[in-house]
Image (cartoon, rainbow, N blue to C red; front, side, top):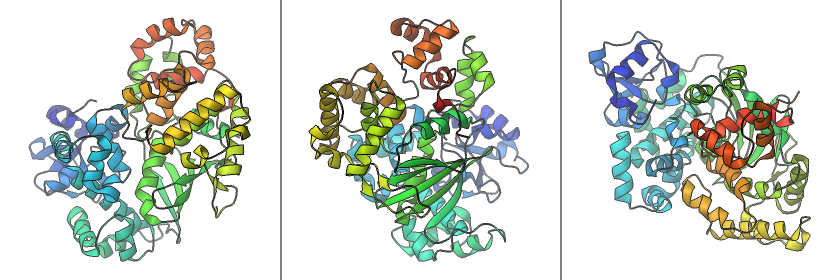
Length: 493
């Protein structure tokens, strides 16, 4: 699968005829006779090839006058893996749109964050995705509206503004145009007995491309959980979320065919952003088949991949938080890093209410950490300087780790900070920036695994050997780490 797949008609037709779910989100099938668009795995009888045309996004289908299929619900497909594996303008723009920036700041705000003109951003999105930023954001609003209509008893006016629409009329017109049903009719089609969310809480399913191995993904999050901010309870990972309009609490439970997600939000306008950040945290838009096929080509990695395919890279819901925690974890154990972080949370975190108990704070914002007395930090003087420099640059905006960050430029800025060596920069690139090719050749766990597997164990030699794993070296790290019995590799009992 590759960039611009929708232009390969014969390949798209084969995917549709075989109902291959691996291609869901990569492209969309529009049927010329019915004016309906579907995901490739739609269960209905495939149309004749001459009646199919293909688009790179749901927004492009909608803009061309097609409405969403009521059977396969293409608007709920996993997102395209491209936006998490690329660092160009279009990919960065798509990550920002998923994070709700167009709804909050408009297209000029999107362009400003990317450092390009509005016209340039619109031109590149239209060329690659067949839709501009407003159409892409509109498609996302429609998906959010559908979710709220079908799973909550909220009044339609509340849903309209929670989904990001500027008026009830626009909400009604968009829902009718995209789904060929009024909001009231869409709610009436919800099967009787389907679970309904209570006020203030939402339960939804986060789809992913199979396979997904939850062991290292949830194991890592649980083993490094900061008390008060995160916890593992009753087979689920729970944490607090800092969001644009307020705060939230999320509970994520792994299931064989989806991740169960329960969200409690202070402001429903944060729903789209919360979902986007949870998907990013769990790397749910990855293409595990493409990743594993490439890593499996190495005879040393092949047995590791075959034993437990579908490993994801555990990421983060807050890039600044992760960078701070990476510094706290320099040259100390996982337990010690958690202790340092828990002290910061207790002293400087913002208190929140958790309806289920257990979680007490948001992780401190960079502004709060920049104002603390460095003398209160129980760490060596050099690491204290590293910490204070990092949080001051995050607080004043001179260092940006957001989804729009340019990976190469950000790496260079991090390396220029005192106390930032290759390991710290690479682990931030892997888990905060989301670079799928970030590699940790100096990591002790990686070097130990390399020795045991007969791979070169010196950083330079291992980096040269790992060239064949590109652009998926961050996933190779997960497979190498998994050779150890560290708690990060196992779901808690």
